[in-house]
Image (tube, rainbow, N blue to C red):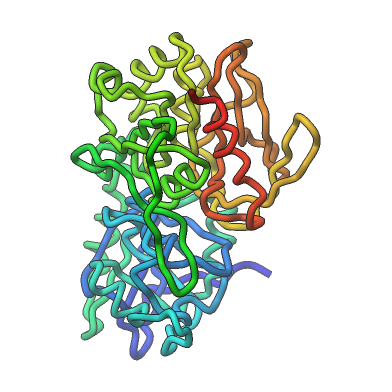
Length: 387
């Protein structure tokens, strides 16, 4: 049966709308911030972690459609925030957000979205919208919320059509921190929150922030490293001045080829020197570009907490968390690049290692606790290379 065609006719009580660049209009109930935002519409299949998703800088300039129908039912809290910088600009959900039911809740999800300036839309057939994305690719769109239900649909269509899209867009510089920071946060414990790590005598990692998630740095500290986080455009001379034992390349949003214009030259120098390098998501793609690989935009991308990835060295399958719309082309890898992991969904690249170098990367997010501990060994592997 074909998906229902969205109608321009506004149903009674509609206070929110998603307007696609091809002119399709999806009505619903608005919540969160009042206003409008433009971005690429994607879908995420995770059943939990909606707050972490919304605060992940890798979702900058994106509108997240949650395929799980019950979003917001455990409220929001300070501890589950991944970053204080820009994340997803809005979200689309099936069911109306109900009052929270969790002892950890400090705020209702809708109120939290409003405070963050992010627009929500409920009452949408998210299955139909997801099928549309799978068939036609991730569209550009405007999400809007107006309590009085008044919308200028032609103007919203025009804005969605004129938005240039993520391809060719460098967003890392926009979401990166502005100054250097010594990371001191420790692991989280129920009832205690985040502790402080004892950093004395540890190998030193310089982490380049292209739009990082805080939990990456917590896991590096948990694995035994001392971490200094630096902005995306930090020069190789500035990195050298910090005397790192290894360099970490973080996740982030946008087109890796665009970010690579300023990132790849420094990464290439680190590789040539034999510096230990570990990259996650965008950092993985940048490592690949520095080694001579190419990247391209995916049809729909991979986003969720249940993605199976095969480790080629021993055939072990890791259950991973993913969030990416670009990927390294594994059909034409340079001889110096070994493919280490592949997606069991579509065979796309999920990991590389550079021959004769202490440098590797993965496309997925080991810090997101998928499995839940299937991939922590990657942090231990990297820290084990240092010193």
